[in-house]
Image (cartoon, rainbow, N blue to C red; front, side, top):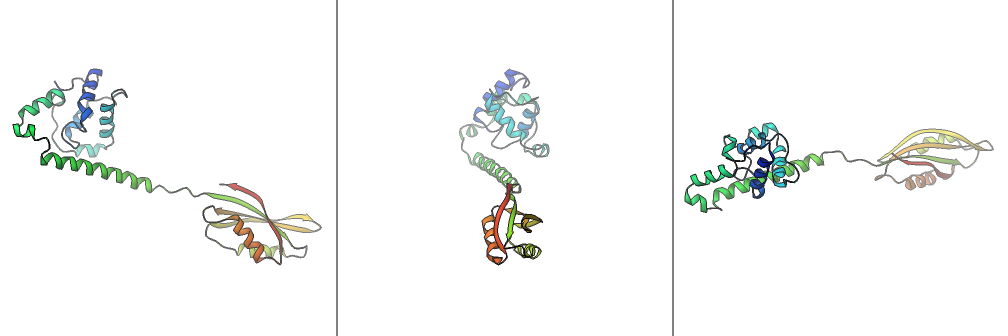
Length: 223
């Protein structure tokens, strides 16, 4: 009767054959029939039984509470499967046997398609909520003064006045170069999509052309 022992190879083969052209054990949407058969399996069918494995994975994708809410009534496991399916067909009216594309079946199939589309939309929405990774770079600039009389504290102040969305200035220090001249080393973190390091260096050279001899990149690393 039915599938037999679904924990055995023979029972799982019978299930694989049964669902090879079906989405569910009964009808066109998940029901308590699927729950009964699903619960009778101790584990997923092997990969060489692809139809049974596909059906099992689909029913498993629902939560316990969702499975409890499936329609239909639970019956004995023996009522499902090849023998149970044939008996159920014999009990139906002749019109039901030949009316393979009746309106009820069409409505159930449409509901099944709608349910599948809803689950795909929910998955896509959940995936879209994951925060995007923002690419950033850590950069240290070498800013050389015009001469030894340049006020580097004032230069640093003016550099920090340069603001841009995606730019964050960090620590700074003075480093001796030669003949009493000190260059300014200043760190910054930039969002790669928003800030170009070339734009920043050009901005410094343009705004501080009377005080700055050159701006070079001392360190550039991706974060």
